[in-house]
Length: 98
Image (cartoon, rainbow, N blue to C red; front, side, top):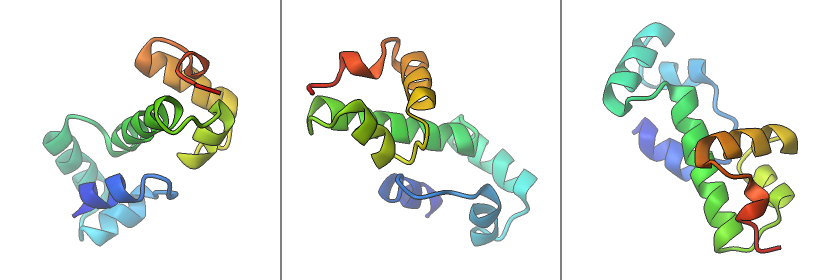
């Protein structure tokens, strides 16, 4: 199941074309079915999973912002910080214990 794969392998580089092929669907069909099932586009869903995992890493695991960003597949700490703030309403540094 693709959702299970995303939750387990959140720190992997997902390619929508590959995910669609694994489901034996065209990209538009995969996108439409995914959104009808989750309410999100595949990319937005993956981003939400990663940001929620990063919040746990910051709150519970005591990761630094840089470590959390890298752990959930963000190559740019500034992009991670912007998206984190947009999603949670506050910057990741406010949730970091380090």
